[in-house]
Amino acid sequence: MPIYEYTCADCGRLTSVFLKTMSAEKEPACTHCGSGKLARAPSRFAYHKSGQRILEEYGAEPRSLEDYKDPRQIGRWTERKFKEYGMDLPKQAREMIDAAREGELPSPVSEL
Image (tube, rainbow, N blue to C red; front, side, top):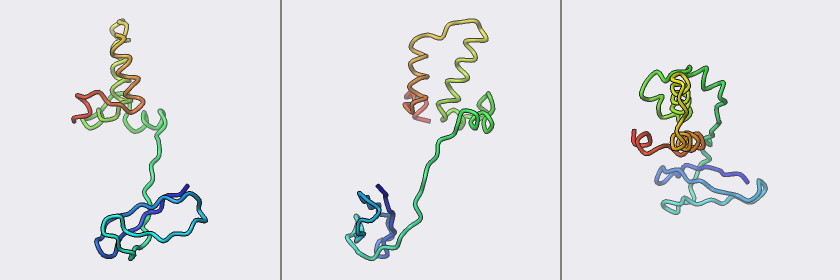
């Protein structure tokens, strides 16, 4: 199920077109102005980094405040500090770390 992206020649905005199959006919219209003058745009893509790649890029410690936007860094640092002090991680902290690893950032961090 491909998603094609087009740039409108009239308004210059990007339009995404979802097709159920690759062989489906494409007669897209701009979702913003209705124009049929569209040119195919290069599609964006995303990829997920492995834990090893994160460590290679960021190391064991966050290096700047920007690094704290990565929920895996926050949890890793917190877990390590509790372990260093010989303390058990509180249940609420464990839940927040697990949620962050799933992409749900705690509110103080998401506002950065």
